[in-house]
Amino acid sequence: MSAVITIKNLKKYYTKKFPKRVEIKAVDDISFKVNEGEIFGFLGPNGAGKTTTIRAILGMLRGVEGEITILGEKIDPNHQTTYRSKIGYIPGELGLEGDLTGLQMCEYLSKLYGNAFHLDEIQKIATRLNLDINRPTQELSKGNKQKVGILAALMSDFEILILDEPTSGLDPLIQAEFFKILKEKQRKTNCTVFLCSHILSEVEDNCQRVAIIREGKLVEISDITDLKEKGLKSFHLEFVTNASLKDFISYLQNEIPEASIKSQSTTTIEFLISPEKKRQLLHEVSGQEWAGEFVKDFNINSASLEEIFMKYYKTNDKENSEEMKR
Image 1 (tube, rainbow, N blue to C red):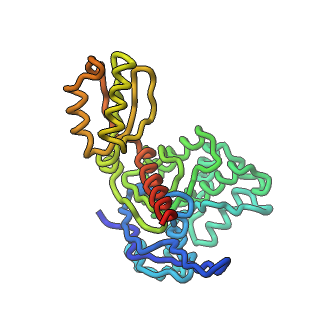
Image 2 (spheres, rainbow, N blue to C red):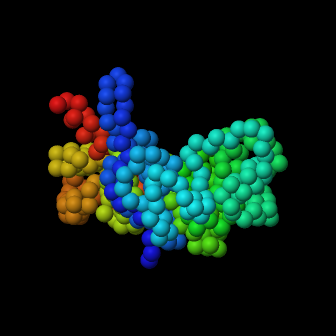
Image 3 (tube, rainbow, N blue to C red):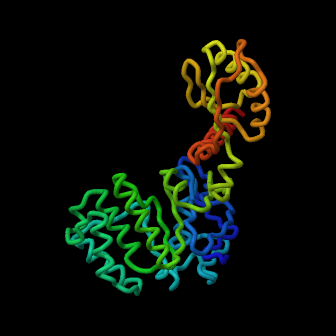
């Protein structure tokens, strides 16, 4: 499978001069590939380096180090070239102000990048998104402005789609419709999608692979399935009595203190543990009595992408806390 986007040793540092001079590593020596025809998720908290990476790919920054290859063409990350016309882009912050209508905006962008202008396609997508393309963008709500951004990214048969929070401000029904349209476009053109989203269920449901960035560094690149398999395990246990549940919680706190309890009632508990502790816990659950009773029932699942992602948040918070103490 050929790579459509290749990032090698990408760096972008900023210098903060006030109140004291500090070098900020927005993107710190990251490398990854995005394969042809896949939907690739790019995740991280605010300030992690997601938008900086996107802007570097699009040639919108200066002072970038490293190598970027787009569709087999090694590009200068400090200067836009003709490859930009092959990319449909939804920025995280849409600056749509002025008298242009949604339709006129699409026509303008088509001329700017030399792309074909398909009026029928634009009207079909606008209808499915419930967007009036003849209203000036300055009169539109945030959600409808976002729809104009989606329309501009999907109006042509771009080879690459770079989507930074594409469903921001949209209601759930329109969010679902957007991903239907996106997958139809992908089946038609085999385009490659680079998706940033804070809605982790979107990434889990639609992406084949995911990269997680934290403080400018990549901390994980994996298939969604593999990430969930090697990630946290979610245990749901049902006990006969409240006394047996309390007995088990005491064991958990003493023997597996890193276990994270998600919920509990008088006789049930759900918690997350690492895969390494799964075998130990299975042995205890299957052969041990708790307050004189065996476990009534149990279920084990892979943690959701959101739960795995939060593990990286918590690791980061812990590291920051320890750093502050030193």
